[in-house]
Amino acid sequence: MPFEHLHLERDGATALITIDRPKARNALNRQALDELRQAVLEVRHDEAVRAAIVTGAGDKAFVAGADISELALLSPAEGKAYALRGQHVFDLIEQSGKPFIAAINGYALGGGCELAMACTLRIAADTAILGQPEVKLGLIPGFAGTQRLARLVGKGRAMDIVLTGRNVEAGEALQIGLVDRVVPGAALMAEARAMAQGLAASAPLAIHAAIEAISRGGEMAFPEAEFLEATLFGLTFATEDMREGTRAFLEKRKAIFRGR
Ligand code: CO8
Image (cartoon, rainbow, N blue to C red):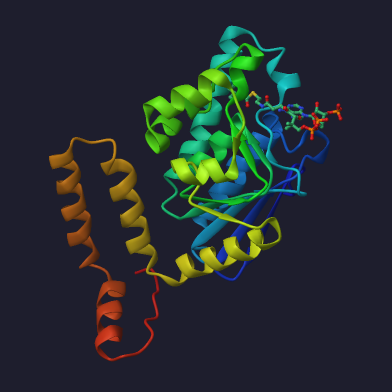
């Protein structure tokens, strides 16, 4: 089924999802959110794809949030249902087992910042601006922003960003851990592609296990998280890729991983 508000392209073992609603600075309306869900599921179920990039069309915005013209009309019950829907879609990204890289090419505000935070890694153009401005609209973040932001940058900084609704420029975002790399705008997509290809070349089951250990482990008490890590570590010994990876090292050749 063709998408109206995004593009999904495959290039070898990587996929590129580009949110494309130029008239609304790539804001996610309900249909765009549904299409994003569909695209994420396609990436997740495509065995040939090992890493994905999410970005926004043009050079102004990554995603300028949820579509405010739709939000303005919601009842309390609809607002809650919409928030749960968005949380579900972003959880799918976080739990897909494949690395998603947010290539933040401009404004990543509200739901856009929340989308970036649900990705595994974030690369920002040096001109990018992030933030959670919902309080300025009489709202609060509803796509898990209050939770992911506090986990990424700490409770105090999350309070600062959410309660002031202020813009966070790329340099500060890097300094506080809201993004992982900042590059000149012209180099953003090349950097994201290189990172995706690098991740795609690693053993996919090991990548999956590492994401699980860090993401799920971070929600557990330390002894249980250590135990999860040891269990996932042990599980990698059941994979052909682990045999291949260690053998290739000893034979001084490049490993070929098959995801088995
Ligand atoms: N929703 C709808 N339309 C938008 C949005 C948006 N989030 N952002 C921009 N647009 C539209 C503008 O209305 C404008 O439309 P038009 O041309 O018809 O007037 C067009 O995009 C261009 O916008 P600007 O002229 O404002 O462009 P600028 O480059 O001057 O500014 C900004 C870009 C800074 C991104 C500015 O547009 C802006 O501040 N946008 C709103 C950002 C925002 O507040 N985002 C948070 C939204 S709320 C949210 O995301 C909650 C998520 C959780 C929801 C839970 C479910 C209930």
